[in-house]
Image (cartoon, rainbow, N blue to C red):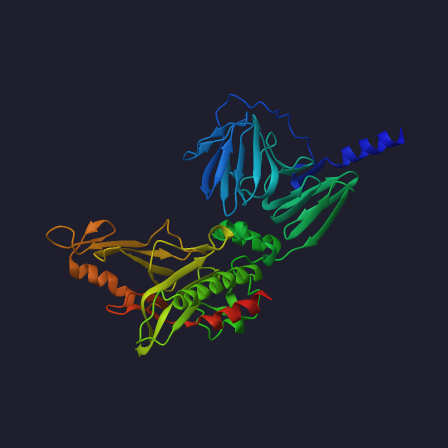
Length: 458
């Protein structure tokens, strides 16, 4: 009999309820069932990045569409370096982290997301009405949301970590109840009915959360007022002096680069440096006029202090023109940034110039007849979806050359004026040399940048 009571007590303790202090106490979630409803969808998968899969209530695959309606019982899963944004009734926004799984359920005005694994960011922009509920839960714990911003982590069935950026929630497990307010995190252990709260800092906010939060200045201000967390100006995680003198472009004291980001950039840089050395050793390129393989790199502010890096390496010429480093073709070029919080190599271009708040990228056509270029804003990452301007040229397209800016035909002189920005106030960059292969400027020896990144990561 005592054993039965112990089991029942543990089962009761596993039912966790977090509710906003304004909701007047925890109300049990509605019986949402498993079979779904026939009513119109009010939950949508509005955006995806990477590999995201959707299944219906029967487990069958659902094809991804723009603004895909999610009905009760649908599941959404993300893989590595992949993210999914779910919109609930337009005022309840959520974002799935990579390697996460969520099941959605709806019954009238009662919405529920079960986080099967991984992490989920939530932002309720309008407090729920008295007849509405939004529950974010795992298999054993429930988070009742009314008008709050934060994220949850579900490492396993018996643990949930709740972080609050704005608002206040009440956590309950067994006979234990704790209020968790903006700037606090609660580590909840259902197996022993314990809740541990403590403060957290901007450095503890995962990149997949920061990537969205920092795009909303009003939300950032609300978070700062509620918690004291200044997500737009968090200050550096490392010693700013490490970034001085190595070709860092931005304010070192405003860098938000984390130790993990520095480590990821160092690994990527080390790999490219090794490739340049290996290509030279294997005879991929050798020219008597060069003085061997060299690698150069620079870090720059991709917006709001977020880190990014540019690289160029190949056969190095000892000859230098007006501060530019000359390399003989072929050469290696790369740019890295952190869209969605994950280190990503920015591809499809072989020239770039970093300006204040934007980057000019260009890709030469394989036959050398022209190129496509675009000026892209730096919004915490290189935002290829919102170009400030774009250009296209093909010197051998028909009887006369074709020059276009933003899709409209222009004269060659207008085109030259547009491309003149390449040689304007660019802080650092890589371009094609006329008969050399490549020119890079504003960069430091890659080994110096690597040493700074390794020190930052420590």
